[in-house]
Image 1 (cartoon, rainbow, N blue to C red):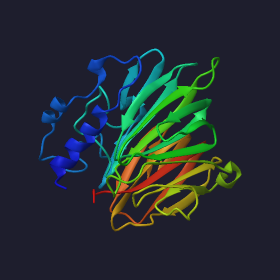
Image 2 (image 1 turned 45 degrees about the horizontal axis):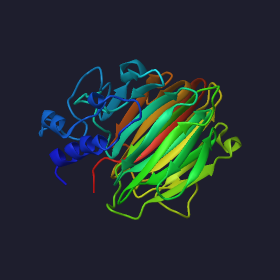
Image 3 (image 1 turned 30 degrees about the vertical axis):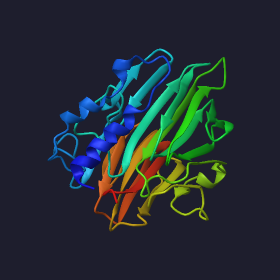
Image 4 (image 1 turned 90 degrees about the horizontal axis):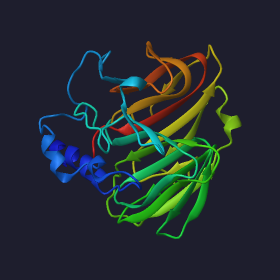
Length: 292
């Protein structure tokens, strides 16, 4: 797939997302794809503030796209809905990282997806999920949910509680196979295995630890005490990069300090050096830098 088509498809994929109580002007339309510069590469325009070192992408938490709809307070790492930044369309096949706060009793009405791998990780509260495959589940803190949208699904997501908010990451990854049969999976993590080490929570292998997706990608998450140092090796450094997202705390990765909800993408490397500057949780997303 040509780069321009890849960029266009990443925006068009959002056009099908209709969110309850959001106005139509908050949706990215097909017309908006004309704004995309076809000469942009996968990591877009060089900017000293955004690219602090070679082959890197730094996105500070307070520079993300933000929207507060009352019932939904959300921050977008990459362009999404009515947030558009041509320098932040995606990181390789990693298309969306939405940091969502959903008010008590509120949520997303029934809406469609197709040909996207969708991962949801709650950090507080409970999220009720219903879909056209017949699933009705509640996703809790400590769970990881995945949907392979494939040929197409409809689903809804609501805060299952009437008295407290739910906080979560929703992450979208372009698949390496199109028009697969839609599927759903959900697991509960043994978070004790994340103490001062990374735990694999996603991979391309159905027989491996964590959930799996149709992509040569691996997600790892760990809880670290202050002062811990470790090196993390990429599984497929010849094709993949890694995007690190600070869930909580403060870390240093390859010399770059990162605070709460900061993100750092690195590519053309074999491993990364990590130091926890204070107690916290770190999510690593290793993904291909090119779309198959």
